[in-house]
Amino acid sequence: MPPRMRDCVENVHDRDNLRHLEQRLEQRLEQRMDQIEEGLEGENYFADIPRRQQRGPIEEDRQRRETCIRIDIPEFQGGLQPEEFLDWLAMVEEVLEFKGVPETKRVQLVATRLRGRATAWWQQVKLTHSRMGKPKITSWKKMKKKMRATFLPYNFQRIMYQLLQNLRQGTRSVDEYTNKFYQLVARNEFQETEDQLVARYIGGLRVQLQDTVNLFDPVNVSSAHQRALIVKRQ
Image 1 (cartoon, rainbow, N blue to C red):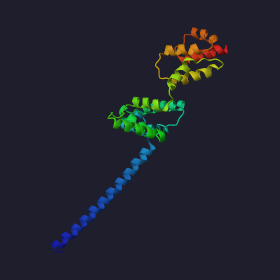
Image 2: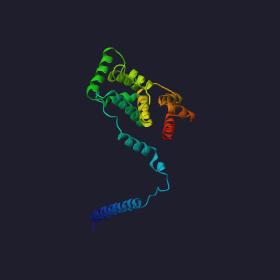
Image 3: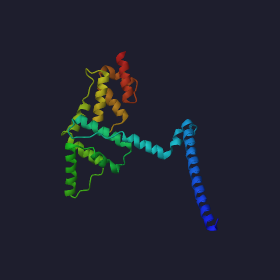
């Protein structure tokens, strides 16, 4: 066989051998990957490692974000009753805290949940600030103050405070009085110490209960409530 033809034949054989070798390597690699996947399904190689270490900080952060996504700020149309509006504000505070929303992003996030009359109000507030050359509202505390002034009736805060000041158990049961006390405390924005709240709570109980509950020297409203229930049953 002439040398040139012999070289061509050898080159063809070499290419065939190389192609065959590549196919065998691919098959063996696929088989190995299948074995590894089957082994992972049958055995947990990280069983002895705490779950916190298995996930790692990146996985934990991802799961935390996914958990937060399931909880959202309720929409606000601007037509709620005063008590419902205050409950909405309280829910917003809880969601913002749970999600860890930075202060610089809170106003923008809450604004996305405004609808109807509330949206029109917010657009007007921004337009007024722009026309008057005032800086944009970026503080959630300031936005909340403006919302309270707009969506709560005139003197509503003073009325709530007066209702709390004048709250007495009267014909209510201890539980009914306690529920009303907690509602009014939540609707007032004053800051009182735990001792002051306990004194306010006991002062609204029936006179027959006050002295006895005071003997136990309760440290918070919850313990005062429990003591009042015990005294009432006895």
